[in-house]
Amino acid sequence: MPERIDFPALLAGHTVVIEMINSGDAGLPVLAQLLRVAQPALGANGMAFVEFGPTGGRVIAATGGAEWALGRPLAADDPDTACLLAGPRVRQARVVHLNGKLAGELAGSDLRWMVVSRAEIGGHIVGSLHALYSGDDEPGPDQQGVVAYLASCVAHMYGDQSGLPVHGDGPVVAALADGLAVVDRDGHVRLWNPAAAQVTGRSVEQALSAPLPFPLPPSGQVRDHRMPDGRWLRITSGELPGPGTLRVVTFRDITDQQRRDHDRELFVAVTSHELRTPVTVIKGYADTLTDHWESLTEADRRQAARVIGQRANELARLVDRLLSSAAEAGPGDDPPTPFDLGEALRSAVGDLPAELRRRLVLLLPTDLPKALGHRPSLATVLTELTTNAGKYSAPGSPIEITASVDGQLVAFRVSDRGIGIRPEHVERAFDRFWQGESGDRRGYPGAGLGLYLVRRIVEQQNGWVSLRPRTGGGTVAEVRLPRG
Image (cartoon, rainbow, N blue to C red; front, top):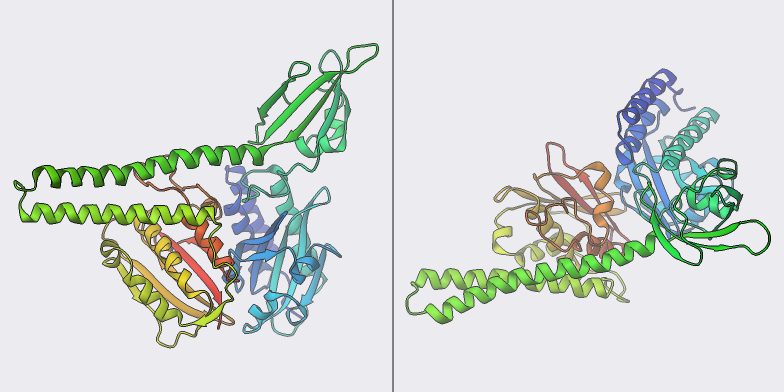
């Protein structure tokens, strides 16, 4: 049997988590701390939490022997994902009995058992909590009970909607149908359908005889209203025929639509700015060369040509990003093939801008096995990751590129010593148009497309990419691909 659960340590650690919540912490930092507390108390070799949305799941927090899976997607049609979403809420299984891609990735590790429990709110699955064990001893009922309890704690965090879900299409914020309410002339609710409870989070018992939780538009009109939790509702109302003064109100969650509209506006604003800057500089230096060629020194001319070249490269990279984004970047239908990852990384480094190359430190093993994927796209991935590292770190500070093998996976990392990334932003950073320091685009310019494209490219090659804060300051971006 595995080691007995250390309940005093679990209680003490859980108290720390509660104190974090009481101090205002939320989201991923609290979830990660809960996993760090649970792993030793359960005697597990690793812990992981998978967040589920309409299109599948993704590992958003992991510790110990499961940390390699951070950022890994779980496709909705994967057999292991289907197994997680059906059957008993809590269960345990031998790793060798898994039927999906995860089984192959775990084949080279010493992990033998998995205890897993779904996190659910009102019957809706928000995620699953996993405890992984090495050795042949089967986990017992105590381990299952504690994992189920911790999964319920995580579900409660999702119910509070404080920093969770980390993805905007999570089930907690997705409306499943139109809400319907009937209100009297005083604005008090007389009827509240299940979808209304789903959209607003207010139960039938809480809603009846109480005012609406949003403003009531005039009869026959439509109003878009932002709720305190950030979601947008589209509300319509009309009078019911018959005696009395009753009004029917319908409403739906339009958060995703609002986000798309905002993205389009942001796309136009950011790209206009990003395109205008290099074009203005190029034009300025070109006009200077044209109008003052004879009066300029040879050094001045070379400097002007150098700046024009640098800005033209920036302009070309931005256009590439925009075109790739419009085409939903990826290798298309080309089948993945084995390629020499070390040689591909060295070759891609040679194509980077000179000022960025001077900062790179390559620490690549000579016996690195081949990766399985699309070699040409690696240049785009490395360019985006190193450019991002350079942008958010001090000029001249080193950027390290390292690589290693882990079971059935081969990985490379780009590490900087810059401003770092907050734990609650490690997933949002992959959203289209999002930037960690978006409040100051003058200091950190960009269209917010680089990491989005990297994730698209890597996942189309059956790999995944993740970010994490670097010990000592800075950020580590890690890409994992199947071995060739």
